[in-house]
Image 1 (tube, rainbow, N blue to C red):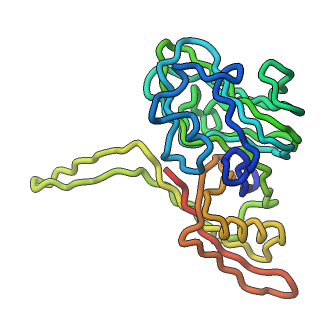
Image 2 (spheres, helix red, strand yellow):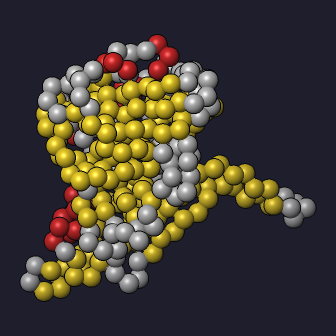
Length: 269
């Protein structure tokens, strides 16, 4: 069991990182097979996990996707969001960072591996996965895809790189988590039920927080103000892209500058 954490600012989208540049693919170039029009890699610069990048047919090997922030950023958490294999297999994504000016062949430091195993998966079997590390300051970040089957193709909504707020706990008594399969259940005239499984999972989280710490309350307020998804690391542990239902944030003054708060987050399938 771990603390609940929330990432508010994704430095890998153009709306939140003014100098951000996507250095398409291995060596700073753009291999012809590494994107399939119109689902180009430029879509990784968007917040929208459903406006996907789709790779072309990739052979066995490693493929790099590099971002340059254009300025130093402090991060401690990186995630992939909305991943789905079309065919073949991606075994893992190793994350590297670089200080100083972006240099494709320069020194890169490994920060860990995204391999879809946070819930017992493997081979990027999860839609979303993340890694955390001690906070570092970097100028560029690299995602290296390891492909083990020829051909392989996949889609990806976006990457997330942020400095998360650690809530220092889970939530107050009365909090709840709802997880359900997205599917249609049609009852035929004969009484037989036909289930059409979409393969996605819907989630919602209710977070009451009595005597809420000031930093936690601030994080909730920032999530309520911005029109973009936040990155929620739940105590299971698992990670989700979420938005605040209805943009609604409730708090009540308890004493002094201490508040009881209550928010509800909705996970994006």
